[in-house]
Structure formats: structure tokens, C-alpha cells
Image (cartoon, rainbow, N blue to C red; front, side):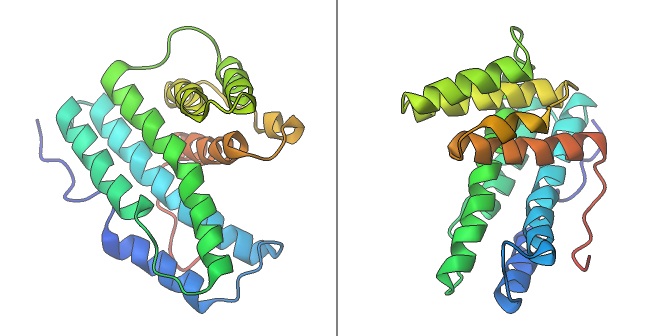
Length: 192
């Protein structure tokens, strides 16, 4: 085992994004605001993709990968210190989208890619479970779709267009970031 990179993601990096959100006028309808929120999400997805890739390449063992994922999860999913409620809700939306990405990565590290069914099959099952208010099952199915994406299967983001807005659509949004990160794990520059 070679020495893994010192850090995949840092508290400071996350805080820099949060500070930018605090400092800027944020309007979710405005393209630059939407881009800032998407970059925040993509940046985290890239860190997760790099951990999974390091695991796949044997640079991290299973425990090491799970530990790295847990560290990033703790940074990204902890409560954000933003006074502006609307901005806090927008960051919360990003965090919600990323929950599924973390679960998918952990599930992939522990058990590999889901064997049966396609990304679309799993997302359909997630939508059905959400409709029945079984959110744990919905998250489980969405995470299994995520393991397929990590394994290289394509997510057709058009699926979202037919769905009613809810947790599953948020999670699919996160999985879309994961898919981009898996195909192009280039770091999002904070000043973009």
C-alpha cells in the first residue's frame, strides 16, 4: 500500500464554500447562484469519487475508504452556521442530495455494485418506496442505483423530469453529481 493522499476533503474547503454562500446574494433562479450551489455539491462528489477510486485502485483498503468517507460525511452533513434561513435551506438541499451519494459510496466499498437491475430500475423502486412513505427503503434503492453509477452505468437525468419533486429527486440530483465526478474527477475551483 502506498501512502494515501493526506486529505480528500477538509473542513476548511467546505467552510470556504459556505462563506461564499454567506457573502453572496443567493437567488436559486439566478444561474450564477445555482452554479455556486452545484459547484459546492460537485466538489463534495469529486472527493467521494476520489476515495472510491483510491479504494478500487488498492490505495485504500475497505476500512480506510470507509473512514475517509465518514470524515467527509461529518464535514459536509453537519449543521451549517448560516443566519439567513433561505441560504441555510439551499445548503440543506445540497446536503440532502449528497446523503445518497455517501450511502452509495459506502455500499459500493462494502459490497460492490448492486447486481440485479439497472440504475433506472433502482430509481423506480426508490420512487415507489417514497410514495409509500418508506424513506429508508427509498434511500436504499437510490444508493443501489448509485453503486451502479460508480460501476460505470449511466444515469439518464431525464428520469427526473417525470418525477414529482421529493427526496428521491434530490438524491438523483446528487447521483448526477456523482456520475460527473466519476467520469471527470477534476477539482472544482473555488473561484469559478
